[in-house]
Amino acid sequence: AQKVTQAQTEISVVEKEDVTLDCVYETRDTTYYLFWYKQPPSGELVFLIRRNSFDEQNEISGRYSWNFQKSTSSFNFTITASQVVDSAVYFCALSGLVGGTSYGKLTFGQGTILTVHP
Amino acid sequence: NAGVTQTPKFQVLKTGQSMTLQCAQDMNHEYMSWYRQDPGMGLRLIHYSVGAGITDQGEVPNGYNVSRSTTEDFPLRLLSAAPSQTSVYFCASSYGSGVPQETQYFGPGTRLLVL
Image (tube, rainbow over all chains, first blue to last red; front, top):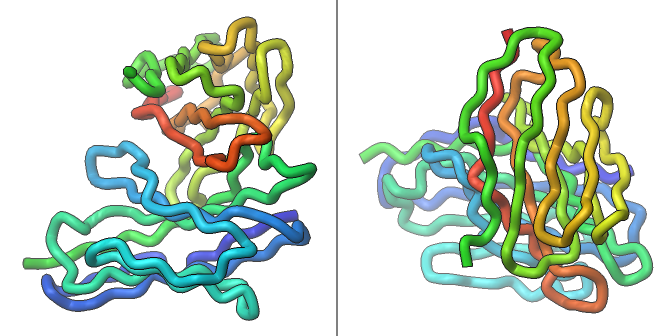
């Protein structure tokens, strides 16, 4: 069985602070994808990043960066110089690959509510 | 492309009523799936489909039926609504096997309240 744990239920920061959202996962699959999605107050789910299990390079996209460490089964997400518009619920998710495909199945963490105060 | 569309946006049902949540995508995606979102529990997979005529159960399938007669549409049926089915429902789609980009794209969601 797969499991994704986001231990931080809620985080509150002041604008311009850096913030890291933690994600720890469990899977028996040897290959898998990891994802982060953002859910703003409007409710839609916005795809942020996909990472393959065989690619442990960290990734940076503007103020966003992701740290994937297979040794600790973690895929953490850092927002640098946070802004009010970053306020949202952030979900980490996992899809295991069987026979080279995930069949479109995702296992989500519980989500972290991020509030950025002006 | 409209992407993934869902109707209705909001629905109120009485216990025991049945209804169908509609989901459609125009990206020729092979895989489609339904999730429900409940506070503190993230999103959980209800049913999924890997192509027309092929469906399977996810983590929380009880009380729901699906069918997939076309590539574009994947409706979710509540057979006899219960208050425990009060939730936000998301439909998602993605390319199928053999394509590297297995990223799920989500519809805007349907908020369901069962009284």
